[in-house]
Length: 581
Image 1 (cartoon, rainbow, N blue to C red):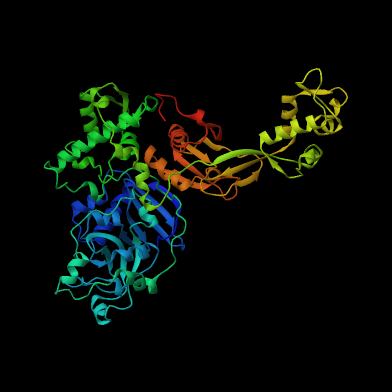
Image 2: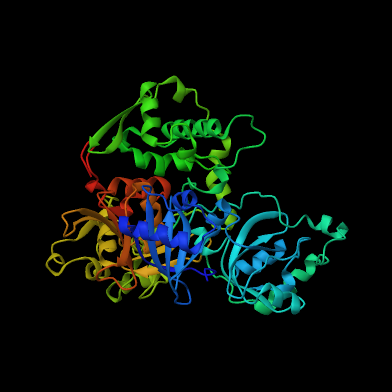
């Protein structure tokens, strides 16, 4: 279902009544979960967003996002867990096992065929046709896919394990997984031992299938493969606070899980202050500090979860840091804490050593094959109109020819020298012949202007040419368009509720996916985002973010995406330091 890119219709924070209803629906759909587990999956106060989207085949799907990860999705009034949820609750669904080479086909959209199943010594789980099931790989119990059983376990065995076994809905590495933190499956004790053990296990009811035969096993059920990978609703985002990877105690560490989480929390905090937070960011909402800075400083393979620390709440942790005189925290508005000062000379900050892995974490995080955004090379060009053809034809150019500014200047110099137009007495001046007069002068100037300096000659010529530009994205052929490239436009608007929203348009011209930008901003700003068609622009979208988020936008576009400032307009609308957004 999510093998190809989906289209987001809306992304909004969940209402209190809908949150309670969702919790009740989860408890009803998954009775194996206790009430504490339901409350952990659908938290009472943490951010929970409802994303309505259309899958590539047109199915309307509702996705519930918590802490930046999709945790559940709803299709035709049925709730399904994502792999992120199954990694925290591996016993939620009956789990079947297949071979690692089959995963590639499942990610591409194939169903799981019964010949690809591996039968454990204890036998297959007992399910009925239509039951929701998890699929894991040999050697690791962590589920990598969910699907619906196409037949009962009894029928599977009766068929001799032939035919289609499961209709796969969602997999690790598909586009729904990519909308989250893109973390790898945790390591769990396998349901089926390593293949080398199976060969020696006389109790096994099925011989291992050679790896070279894996491709043949799933061809029958293969569907459409996935296409190009756009950055749908998530970007290169912060690690998820509630995913399983951070909840398991490191067996090599003698400290308790709580002590490990305390150390990780302080490490991410100091890393964020030393490398990410700047003086211009202050005052900084505590939620933004956590969501935009601390999460992204979490080492690969670790997950930050304040609830598993001794502090339990971010406010308590920040008060502790304030007592150490590292930061100063104030409640600038009722119930909302902000960092108002940081002592960057504090010994704990100055002595903190940034891990080498974090310097390349962005590159390492591209294990899914996606490349970090690189800005295009934008080059202004000039198109020769019919009226300027006589001046350029001697150099081999004709109507419609495209030239760079340096080439235009070379043509002018060559023309003047070839026709002996350089003034003998003052070589900084050029005498105007009939061609230059017709091409460059206004009618009322033709009898009064006899000479022009070189710069004036070139500037007049550039003004008479038609503007164009060339855009070259990394690894792609150049694209040439007429006119001037429109900058990314940032504006502020006032909604009917008297609340401000930040609107950004024309991201597509610079190769930026509005959905990816919206997802990144939503996490950085801790504010809801919506994507709508841009008024008056065909096939263009605009991103709206609640509040004045121009400062966050500026940092994202200029410092992270490295776009030239001249291509971004509206940055002056950022709120002044100390002002409420």
